[in-house]
Length: 171
Image (tube, rainbow, N blue to C red; front, side):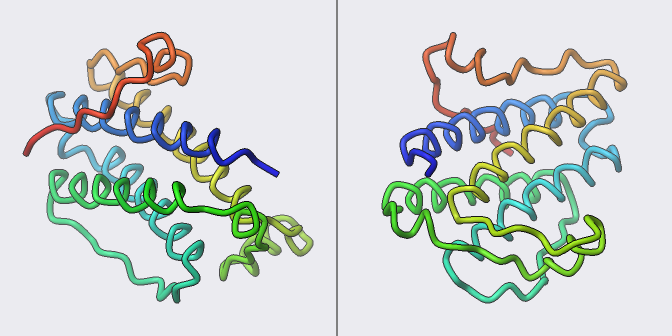
């Protein structure tokens, strides 16, 4: 069973790192309108929202918003964090251990060649943090290709800075 305190800490780090990346995207020439960066950011925030919907046992319609510009996408991504922090704060061990079968299991089965194994809400919360980290690295690589110095968003850097709160850009 994953420790609730660790999940909360990982999500505080995730928000801090997402905010740093958004600051870099919105201040790097060309990044704000770069199609690849926008694709990664849309995917990251959609996956975050999709799992959050499942954790709350709400129906997943598959309909997520699209955005005319980077600023509105960032605002949507940022809005997730207040809700998810409140959710994790009240998460009981029983709820965290609850099995979670995503509606995209058939797609996973096709990819794996077998049905996916059982997962819990806590395990999928860890997946969201790790998945976000993976794509944040892709975004940082793209920022470097555009001539930026990507932000240092490693978990250890957050710890070295004594776990600062996220500072989201104002748009």
